[in-house]
Amino acid sequence: MNLPCQRDKFEIPEAITYLDCAYMSPLPRKTILAGRVGLQKKAQPWTITGDDFFDLSERLRAQMAELTHAKAGDFALVPSVSYGMAVIAKNLELPEGSKVLILDRQFPSNVYPWRDLATRTGAEIIHISPEAGHSWTEAVLAAIDGETALLALPQVHWIEGAELDLIAIGKKARANGALLVLDLTQSLGAVPFSVTAVDPDYFVVANYKWLLGPYSTGFLYAAPRHQSGQPLEQCWQSRFGSENFAELTQYTDQLAAGARRYDMGERSNFALLPAVEASLAQLLEWGVENIEHSLRNITDQLASIAAKHGLQPDMASPRAANYLSLKVPTDAPSDILQQARAAGLYFSHRGDRLRITPHLWVNQQDLHRFDQTLGNIF
Image (cartoon, rainbow, N blue to C red):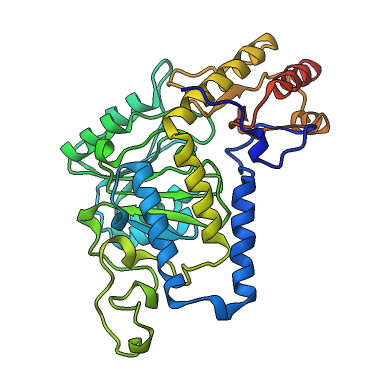
């Protein structure tokens, strides 16, 4: 189903064409309102009850479960991808001489933890890059062997916008006894994902891009087989029975059930969590499959416009619906972003590519401005 333009749900002026959701999404109006209501609650702390420390986080877990075909208890609340990856790395041991596979030019939050772990355990980091004419998925599948201990991957490459076939990759990883750890920040909410189909060991996602949520919030998914590990910090809320405030000094070593044990400290953010809930509710109302279909339609139109001005994706991998990554010509001006922003057009320049990442707020005026501005620049 192709969704109609949803610009009225966002505070985007008519003079702005924002095609940079992969950098940071604007917050929906409902999300802003929910955040204000939550912040006001802290202004009157006598209205905050013991239930407020637990109920909302459980609703968020349920929303994430619905979004990814998982279970609510599979999710922990984290402030960032780097935090979530640190939790995972703390609970993993890699055999000496084993291999950790990552993509070439992968986002650093899903690289640094594994470099550190490899240094401590004697494992080897392998950077994967597809040969000419081959896809990222083909390159990953070819690299997996009996020495592979861990694959740390995205669903969508943050620069090229290439989408990986995680179902095929997950199947081969399991056949070789390798763990699959994913950063879904550049896809979840815009590209369908099912833990039932992929069966990852872990994934982490930040909320501030395609989940349309506030910064400094995110989720860690841990498969049921990985829910008996140790948290990164000793949060009182992630202990068994912590709902009973009167008994908090009856200290216990028993951690909370499921992935809740991995929750960050002070997870009950009274301003940000209501905003997260509002954004997830909006995504679930639209439906991720509908969002993907609609974004494919938008990026296809943008690709046709870009082609008129000599700009092409130039890649062998399938392009994710939410991404259009255009190769920058060698004779392009050095101030592409400055010229575009002066015209009210916003996108990113990453490496040798222009990263065009729209969402449902794009309208015909935006398409016209994109066409006109590219014509002036190129």
